[in-house]
Length: 217
Ligand code: G3P
Picture: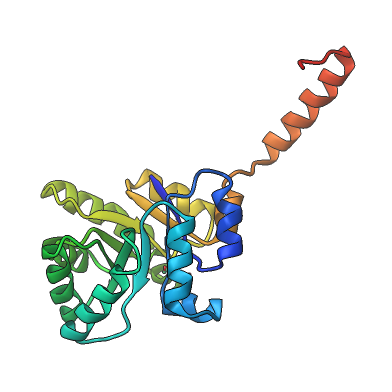
């Protein structure tokens, strides 16, 4: 499963990059606003920093303007993925981007039918929002399972990018459900490394090793 960082904070991204385990980055208008930076500058910097798909979202709501915006965003770097909302206009734009060979991430997906349409439009990625469905009392993770089944039924190439993941349980469940990628808040990514038994076991191993008086180097 590819792991993307859901942030435009370049300091944090540089830190996460050091792990060698970050495969890409996703942004949205909220994340760009939070960065307090110019969108083109920050996306360019992220594209240079991380060698992988970098999602940058259009702001228009009509297909012709989305297409112009998307083409401008795609010109920033070859690893830009044009992020479009899952609307009729968004999927018209997705079809056009697909015809041009440009990568797309269809976002704000909350149903199997929406995901089916995104795949038919030729989306590179579809982003089902797990946490926001959970917030409404629905079962967000079931949507990942269901989209996996539909995409496998018809051999769609669109990759399932589990989004709006809030914690490590979400990440593990998305992997079990067969998501191709997951986008993670930085803290959730860091939390993936942790287990109390790892800390406890290491503490014992180090104490016992010290007792041997040996050195490997
Ligand atoms: O990238 C969009 C998505 O991950 C947003 O998550 O926590 O704002 O629902 P959240």
